Length: 499
View (cartoon, rainbow, N blue to C red):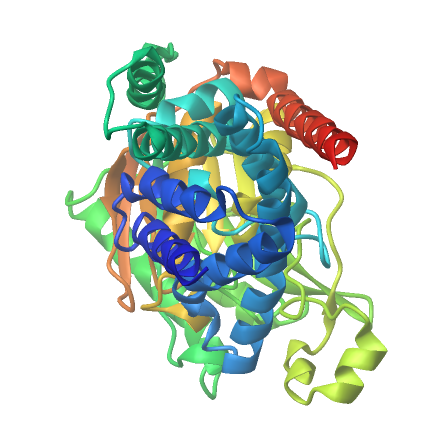
């Protein structure tokens, strides 16, 4: 039992190494292999605890970016998310009794990640296997079946590795290179190699110049606005003026549009004359539309996190309101109970109201696809934006509370995967970093540091060709979940008949 627990803990820790900022992508299948080895031949009750312990070893360091909110929030989140791994471990112990268990286990891994993306309180799909593969041999699979297929292929490589180890250990007289061993090894190697055969849409020869602004903030942690929220707005306006001067001096090409990050103004520009004048001055100076990340009031009770197009001539126009809100950050689930039990929960303040339509906004010569921060982790949020005609994709994000943690690089890896999944360039604008430009093949072509003010103008390809993943939508995920669920039900039924 202790050996199995040790293997599970080791698997969780190795899996953590695959995720940014360390980013050793090859550790992901190795981590899965160790976790599977820990479960082999284990009764389901023990398996639940072994899986739970392995999840703790993985999620505590991977989700350590939650700590600025509070260690209690970090502990609670990890504890809840690890329950999904415990359920996965129980199901795996049953399917491991069949010959094709590496395949069924990989399907069940996808099911586990799907469930975590739904519940509780709207789901939390962070730390999916796919998000450790921002730029790896597995990444091209995203163009075929999105993030679920990438997770599946990584998990399948890991389970095949574990099956190989089990076969060798159980072979009488030691290691035997029979057909099963050779076939298993070949399969583990072939999975990532097959990704090189995935067709990639070609360049269409059209580009757009996008100015990216990172203004930085005066404070840190939960109080990143400092004592004066207007400083954040001024910082982003000042960087825009600096860009305009660089354009006039011939140091930068003139952009077709400019992107500010989420929460680049916490002062409602519809209500504040000061905010309107600051933004309008910046837009007139650069001479092109600015996508402003604004927090605006809706009536007297709600607010919205809004990507607002600000034209240098006509002012505020089209907008996108964030649809996937952060629980306990932008709204409070079970509001009355939570506010009564937690003083910190009052920091949310006015509750946010979710938008209803995808973020396809016309800006200059293109229709940009706006994704707000947290939404990039949710497959459907990005897919809807692409389906609405958004190209390139723009991720407005505010990671100020989590600066210098592992959240910004983890989120950037998600943008890399989305670029390949939908054949779209992705431009990320962040208040404190990491702002970046990701090419449609998932390569980071430019990025900023953290906790610095910065700006740049990047030439971004405009792609309209769709990938198979975009056309199929959630179908590959549903197929994999169905296969895993069917295999589990059949395995449980067989175990009951034999008991």
